[in-house]
Image 1 (cartoon, one colour):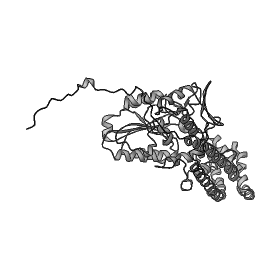
Image 2 (image 1 turned 135 degrees about the horizontal axis):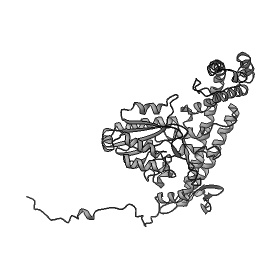
Image 3 (image 1 turned 45 degrees about the vertical axis):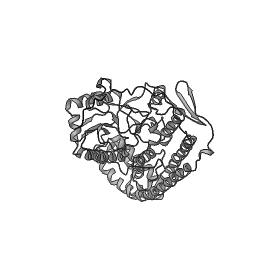
Image 4 (image 1 turned 180 degrees about the vertical axis):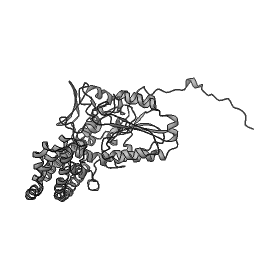
Length: 460
């Protein structure tokens, strides 16, 4: 027989925790100057890659302007591959580049009675321009046989049905001549980009700490915060400067890693404020939406965010190596939660959305504990994108609603650069919301029409 022994068990009233108290402990951390120098070099090299891409697109395809965000989407898609390198080099294996280029040539756009006339006129003009530039001698044969340019003269006299029928016939001849030329040049462009990215990765590996300079990051406080290293300068507003300070997990080296963070996001994905390039893929939902997501569905974690646009302290993001110092859990595609409620607002690229839908399906399949995802994606239905179709058919789909374009808002991806009076914009597309849950998740966070109405209202 064991004798009963009195133990000193504290009452539950004395148990507790407070995560809001910040530590005053300072640990000795070996800061690597080559983290800073490597990012500085990466920013220069990736800028050269973007410039080479622009140059080759204009030389090979006679583009007046390189398609906006085209290389950004290619890089982002490759970063979404699980366990991928920071410098992706899988260009040859993917068809994203083909889509980006062929979209400019109107070879993939759908022409039917729903196509507005002004859009069709633009397509006709583009066809004539590219035919003349790329087909050269063959262009005259094309014009003589098909009178493609005559369409512009006849444009105002034809009905919509006549214009559509005549153009589709003429475009077929244009496409047949053009496709072979585009395909061969696309293969060359892919090889060029593969070589450029391989060289970039090799050059970064050559950096040694002993070869780095002792230059420091400087921070200047003016209208905005200016973060500089050597000749490189990046800006951010005070709201996000203070936010990043709050997120930063270390006791020192904030200035250095702030530069690395800004450099990574503003050069890896090229930023051009004049045409809003590089910012669209970092758009986020307004604060009111997150308030409702937490209240209605217990959401506490974002599947796609960044240190700049995250609402919760818990989030996944693109660059695990630097974002982790600001609280990121790393890439969502390497993240395997078995319980919890998530918001997922992925970058608006077909490939990333498709991979997200597959990953969410696998996570829900493999967990019996409460797991829930509230997903926001553009309603691209002409033709339907694979990711959207996957979620429509999912056995875990609990609710699906469409929010009409121009009647809801997003926060611009340039929120951390802009003055804080111009960060909201009206969505130019319908947004589809999916609620995906396993049985335990649906029991924990049930879905009904009233909740969905509150959520849609918050997006206005």
